[in-house]
Length: 146
Image (cartoon, rainbow, N blue to C red; front, side, top):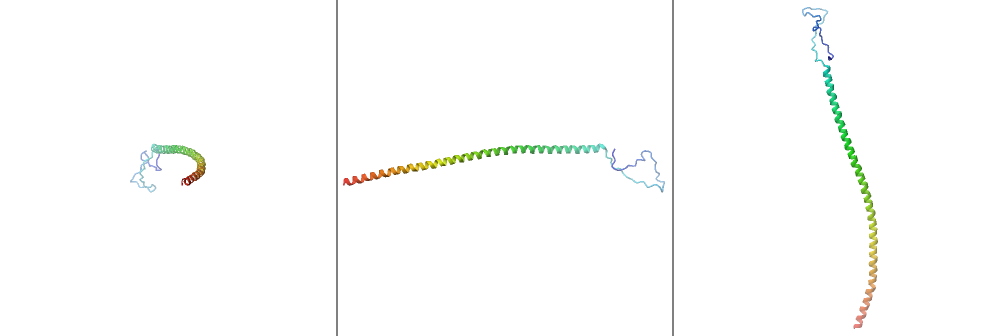
């Protein structure tokens, strides 16, 4: 048994010298009454420490599980970020390719507009002399009819 720093007087229990209360001795101190505290047994201490150890183990396991969960979320988020970076790179390449094709198409459209404009101008130039010739012939016929 482990006693809490408290000494218990057990002389009366083991047959030690008994004091006569009627006898007054000048060399003896009066008896003091000390109630012993409940002794702490090793089993109480062991059970308390065992409970604390189990609680600490449970807490460590809980924190370890939280860490594993956080690591899992980190891996998942990193995977998502990597996929997003890949998608952004691919989309950027597609946009650049589309811009390139748009520039080519715009250049072709400008060339076609210029071609149509030049063809239209040529047709107008051809129609103008023909109309002048028709106007001359109409003027001649009007004069001749008169």
